[in-house]
Image (cartoon, rainbow, N blue to C red; front, side):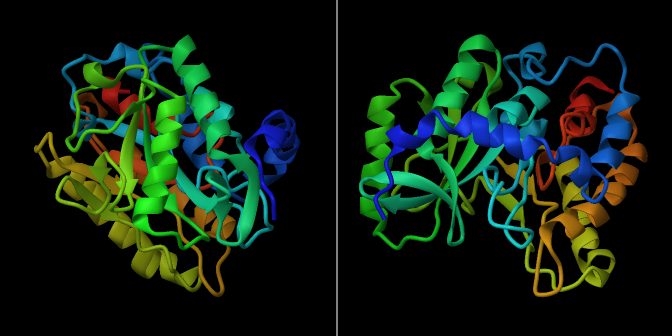
Length: 310
């Protein structure tokens, strides 16, 4: 299999547009409408999705914000057992998503984006181009990016060497220090969450992160008995936390032997919407970073509005 970034980069926008054509139908089954309805009621003072971080103070720690994200950000292909999103990377950015979960297959000295065995018709270079273009137009924003090896088994050092090549070809784009930065330090940049021991950045699963990601949920019945209690407890913990050097990440996504990602998203969305409705928004509660499946153009605002008391 000879994959090259160059030959697919120009196709990505077109393929993403085709995927978006089905978004309305997917909303009826997935997790978008309940959160979108919550977002529709937000105060007018809440910024739009493209520039909401720009309205927050430079001194704010990324760990003490509520940040909407996507699980398996680029997984638009492979069928119902594999697909987790309908929005392209540019459309997720425009909607207000600021955490990306990027799964990289190391092949021929490049990173092809995969979900398990399924190539997602996009390369890491395409993702970086999208981020760079967005951040150039919206320099007050930043993107947190988990970088993880998927469907390849090269050594950590080989994986890191490929990543270092990307760093050299996108100079100045990455912020890859081993601490949680203040927002003002990383405006216009991609903050690396290193899910490989050879990578620079904030170590995934290390002392600076607190992660809830119980994703292997067998059936829809376990959403209420297991998945949601875990998620809500972790959101409660994020609200109670005060450490600016501890990043909470709460994945609302799951799937299993009898549960597809979209079914899980559809069951989780009203629970999350109800949780948000029960908060004292005026107190600006901090939920940390919340990666989700099947986000819509309107759903991220229900989360990032909390930063503004909305």
